[in-house]
Image: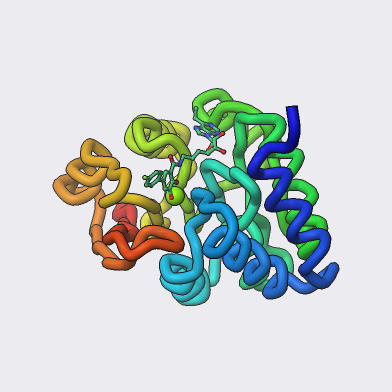
Length: 214
Ligand SMILES: CCc1ncnc2c1ncn2[C@@H]1O[C@H](/C=C/CNC(=O)c2cc(-c3ccc(F)cc3)cc(O)c2O)[C@@H](O)[C@H]1O
Ligand SMILES: [Mg+2]
């Protein structure tokens, strides 16, 4: 009975963040998760690296795997140029509902397409569903065992172009060893590690940026 952690995060956002102000939503979640209850958001330190890569990529189409409460969805969507779109996939309907309300509180619902379902089922449907050509940026932050199969699925579905950027969270903690080996050894990727820290903790973690060479 009682509430869930995502609900407690949403309630804190609704109480403490200003409606339509994405930055206040981001800082409310970071404040709650660093002082009250830890949660698996990319967080403020890795979030700054994410921000820099979104800005340098200037993407028209972004895909996020693993929405959770929508923290990184808001971080990314707030930086998109007008007309750009962020498609985010979340298989847990409860988490998806929380994320929907977090995204709405930030005033970013127009830039975000939140799809509820498994990435392995939805990725092959994206071209038809959303008349998408290719993704310019993919932020991977769902189950760590799904990073590699979903990357291969994106390749097979023709959703990546020469220059598409994959950005993977948690390549150190919890780690995604099979994914890391693949992107660092495949001639089809130019890969780079960005060292940082696990969200809200003094533990090493990092992001891996991998450019698809086509
Ligand atoms: C079927 C494919 C598929 N399709 C669609 N949605 C999917 C999906 N597979 C998963 N989801 C959703 O994505 C989110 C899961 C995210 C999983 N993330 C971590 O496990 C993680 C852990 C730590 C950490 C934990 C404990 C520690 F001690 C240290 C570190 C830190 C981090 O930043 C982390 O991202 C949830 O919303 C799932 O519903
Ligand atoms: Mg993560």
